[in-house]
Image (cartoon, rainbow, N blue to C red; front, side):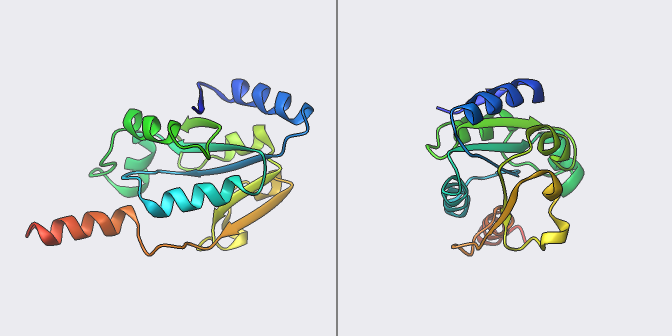
Length: 157
């Protein structure tokens, strides 16, 4: 089961130990609200770039700032519990800011991973990673599409 880090210092200590063991540290981030097959595929591919996958998770407060007051659908503690159960993930850290820049700066990951929908120049923290990888999405699914479908099926939209 993945470790949940309560602060950046804990995460950095963990990553430093793993690097001394010769491990490559991969970092990605997201909201992970209503976890679906697209998330699982993305996280498994992210893990394949290295040995240790650290996932930054937007807090409920962060998501509200980014996506509006009706989100997240799934509260932070439940999203984290689901993510902790995924084999691909080795560590999780929650952040309140809009972006995980402070985490990336401190961690200096060997590989920073984002979806291919992100242009390279827009990837936050890319200058602090040794390498940036972008992943094509294998599934035409998103939390927003799931919400839209539920509302449509139940006559709310």
